[in-house]
Image 1 (tube, rainbow, N blue to C red):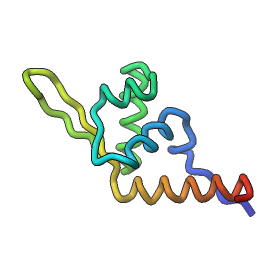
Image 2 (cartoon, rainbow, N blue to C red):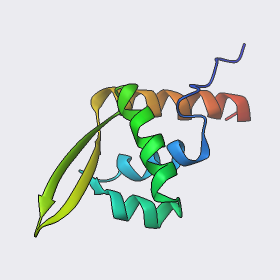
Image 3 (cartoon, rainbow, N blue to C red):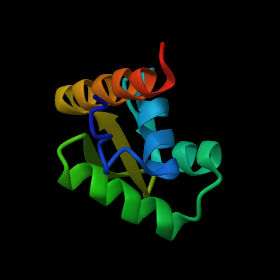
Length: 94
């Protein structure tokens, strides 16, 4: 029997963000925006959903008088991503 896919991760943009964050210590908002080709507003909303789920941490600060937002994946987020990928592989019969 197939396991349910995590609805938080089962979104193109949220899945893309999580995929990017899995391989790095942290990523700035501008980097995520460029890599996903998302609008700033949509990316902000999706990052907030990931934060509320406990999958990422968001740190806001100023760097050279400019706002800087940095995101990093949490331990819970890594586990959720790994489970999502495993369940998806089960769907694909791998």
